[in-house]
Amino acid sequence: MQVDVLLGLQWGDEGKGKIVDVFCPKYDLIARFQGGPNAGHTLEFDNKKFVLNTIPSGIFNEGTLNLIGGGVVIDPIILKRELDNLRTAGFDPVGKGSLVLARKAHLILPTHQLLDAASESKMGAGKIGSTLKGIGPTYMDKTGRNGLRVGDTTLPDFMERYEKLKAKHLEILSHYGEIPDFSEKETAFLAAIEFIKSIPHVDAEHLVNSYLKEGKKVLAEGAQGTLLDVDFGSYPFVTSSNTTTAGACTGLGVAPNKIGAVYGIFKAYATRVGGGPFPTELEDETGEELRKLGHEFGATTGRARRTGWIDIPALKYAIMLNGVTELIMMKADVLDTFETIKVCTHYKHNGETIDYMPYEIITNKAEPVLEEVEGWNQDITGIRTKDEIPAALQNYIAYLEKALEVPIKYLSVGPDRVQTIEL
Image (cartoon, rainbow, N blue to C red):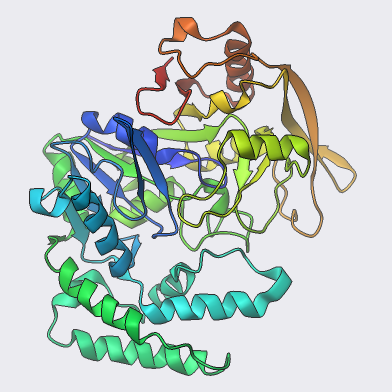
């Protein structure tokens, strides 16, 4: 058996959580492999809506084990809140034993969040657009070999380790100015640490590989999107982890030859949150219409997302980096009322017409070359089979498949899990 990977091909917010929820009955294990509670995976079913930040999106499927992998950074307070909310809604992953934590996953401290806010504030107009969840500073401590991990919480000297790292953070914060009072959050953090001790801690790399050896099916769930990858995204306007297929290997302890299908998810248009380049961005009435129709506001932060037309060079780049084998197109219904749709096929950059994402795209912007495609101009939210798909939408799918050279296997026509069509 091999690990299948499901990840986003744009700047995040593609709808990964919904598709993991749809796919998870076919899998024995769903594993988050990177990112932190800056992710917001929205799931809708049975007239209920859930937003997950850290917990894998297979949590609602009976019989599926869910793993928060070693490449994830965990805020114990947010994780406890998520689980409390699920329990209130009638789901109890801890009680049912359907959630486990990797011992090697790093912990987000209250002082990590203070560092995040102080750093972002100092950057002024050049700020990254951080969610201020402490993600970046936590990954900095991880690579700086200072971090605290889930497995440390059960060691007798955990509090000594915590105080040592906190002292380091406070020393850094003193250079930014007055340090805000975080005593209330610290109390909540330490209480949440006690809580997460009740969730089984596992050596995730052994768990995942033992599942494969036993012939069980594993799906790795990504967060954010490929174009936010710390190495291959629009740096420095990126997240702090590897959001690509390679991140599934390092985040879960899976060898590259154990990767199977790679499901790449993208919207029928494009969105981005925070700063950074966005070649097809629409800062006009059309962009506002896309935002309104697509309810393009962050599931975690509530921030309005920037909107634009679909970007073929960016998608081809993401497909190449990830080794995508199947595509999934989300939110096609958002384009229901558009008589024509535009597609970016190339960029004009430095006096040339190119079909790839250039290195220098931040200070020297790429101008999109757009083609117009006929819209279907009808409500598709009620269709449930591929035979019901309007001809113009079929043509749009065929157009994208030809340009991207990978088949589109699933189409989403609404937020509910039943509004997913296998093509």
